Length: 270
Image 1 (cartoon, helix red, strand yellow):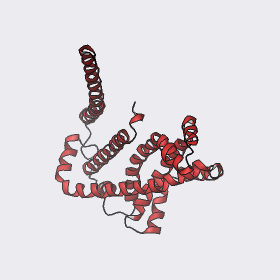
Image 2 (cartoon, rainbow, N blue to C red):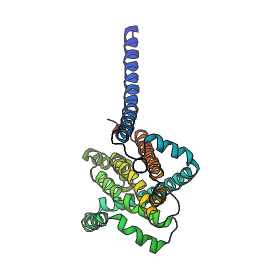
Image 3 (cartoon, rainbow, N blue to C red):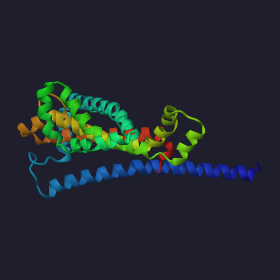
């Protein structure tokens, strides 16, 4: 290789690296700017409309409340986070095998899909009191609510991915005399991973919602309980602080999944 070719290769590699760094910076910068703009608009609205603090507190009021109540909010944050992650994990453990069965059986797909759609159409807030009656006031109803909310998008996306395996991959597996298990593990499931992560990213935000809905009924801790208790005490600022923390939790969990997707399924990058 000549010196000119080496220099050209180095220049191209450097340009590609700078391009990737710029793309990552843009992905971080734009959401950050959006959040800053939204906070500024929130503050501006409280000034322009002169809303009293007990109706709509300013961002500064909410920040001060978060600092003053940091011990309480930190404990409740951990509770809601634990419920969300545990329910999300259980939903994956149940939904993915369920999707595999549906993808490999046309009869079960035609039989079960309508029931799944009907189950998903039921307002989950209507089920929450029943879960408390059936499972008591512990962590059980919250986990069950998260599983119920996360189950449908994971099943649908995973089953869709498994049924969308490119024909050339299937032909390759058969030409290599791969067994059904080998075909699934080596070809179908890896090809379905981009679809699986679509469902997971939808479900992770719903997991936080499910935990909060469960805490609205029969809870003594968690950010959902903080919101309910704050409403009863007319402490709007504390309720806003809990809502802000829930938003932060959802954003962090979502982008953690995005990062995991980049590592596990690098070929699905834009």
